Image (cartoon, rainbow, N blue to C red; front, side):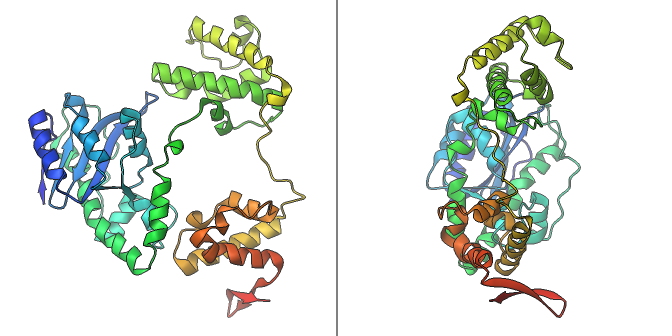
Length: 384
């Protein structure tokens, strides 16, 4: 394989590389980025490998990336990533579009008995028998110039990936799970996964008190912070931390003086931002009670039996081991709780292959027609 030792920094070289890429049916793609001090990730490097070539593109050099965006949109070329979500988020932020079609080897590995979320190093070791050198994984990719070792390290991500792709797809094809995998790949191409509604950010913040009035304030304060961080391109906690936002929601200050007395409130926050917070609180307090957010969903103890939940977890473990599918791929804890509540039959576990692997047996277990027994020290399923 011909591997470039230096990143592409001029448009002529980039155009020649593009002409190589468009003749490929499959490309492996990865990015290096930094997100420590910004809201949006800063794209530092784009690595691409074809069947017998690979190179890295330096986005900080001023090259025209429009042909790379064109490449990502090319429907005739499959783009292979590992743990694609962050890479997809970067491209979506920069172009407004998600690369298509895409293939995520981390998702594919979940269909191969390799656990819930195998890392890149584990994938390379499993399929290629190689060890990945981790010495450069904490590189500051914004620094220039990048060393030869740094470039080689970054490009190796895609040179390994392009070799793994045919191996993992053959394994999936041989187990007749290609259609299952394709459906999961479609799910990560949904733009709604990457577009955050500022009014939903509050749901990610941990708080003990879940009174609707407090949640209403937190909802609108978190939305204000989200929009402000986007404008300033800074991380959320750099503007104001989650715990401070919660304290503001509890105390509902009506003046800037009251606001600044709140514990750990950031002293560096601008007067304008402080005014915005007070205005946000006042506007939120005018919202009628019927429109306050509901208390975060919980499952009542009277409805959810811990024993039933543990039995379903045991069945899930069995289903995972028998099928070679990752537990997380089949069902999560919310799926199991929804099963016990049995509010409807439109649950994820009752659709497609999940129903065959787990859903049908889960109903049998809850109905008492499926059980477990010990046999030679091993837990076995039995029909009742």
